[in-house]
Length: 124
Image 1: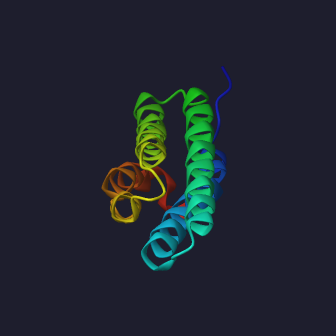
Image 2: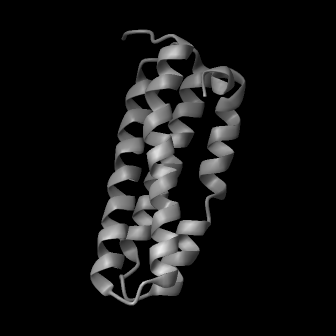
């Protein structure tokens, strides 16, 4: 098992995390304002893709950690992303209110990021 420095691990997760959050913001905005179902479907698919990518990167980085706390914190981020994309995927595009609520409820992701702040804050 390779050990990744905090800087490399945090930097690897930064981009996918930012993209996942942007995808959720976009999904919430599109779902709230669009009357074209195709736009909502596309925004939903993009948000899911970005969350899946975050899940994969966070899991990979977690597996590279020798520090148990840091490994656990990266896994918590992966779990939060996984639960979020599962929730969004389970909501039909026609359920606009459900998509807006799911996209705006970022508490689990925020909690996972807060756990990583001590190790990653200076690199984010």
